[in-house]
Image (cartoon, rainbow, N blue to C red; front, top):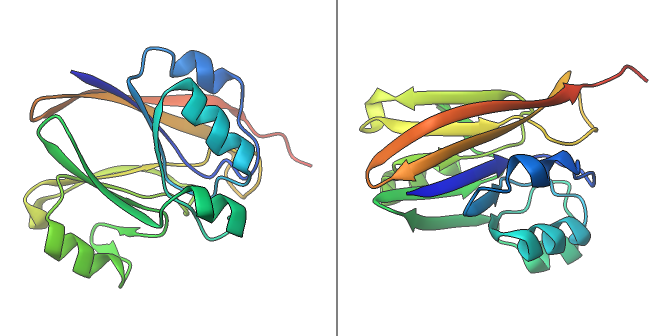
Length: 168
C-alpha cells in the first residue's frame, strides 16, 4: 500500500500544515504552479516527490521539474500534467497522451477547483485535481487530497481543507 499526498497551485506559498497532513505519506505529487525552487527542494527533502511545472513557473523551477510525468504506483498508471482539463472537457494536448498511455489516474491542477471525477468513457479513468494549496488565485478554500493506492485499488480518498482564504 502506497500513501499519496496530492497538491497543486502553491504559487510560492507552502503551508507548514502540509508537512503534518502528509507525514504518513510515502509519496507527494505536486501538479504544478509551484512558484519557487525552494518548494521543490523542501518537498523533495521531506518525501519522495513527483512534480510537474505549471504555467506560472520560472525557468529555474522548470529546470528542476517535468512538464508531464507518466509513472506507476502499485498497479496503477498515473499521468500528471498541470493544464489537462477534466472529463469530458480534456485539454487538446492531453487527449493524445490519454489515448496513447491509457492511464488509470489523470492528475492536473491549474483550475484551482478541487475535482475527483471518474470517466467511464476511458475505462473508469480517475481524474484528480486537488484544487489550490497556495494563497494566490480566486479559490476561497485552500485544499489538498490524500489517498492510498493498494494494488489495483484507490482507497481512503480524503479532501483536506487548509483554511478559508481571507479577502484582501
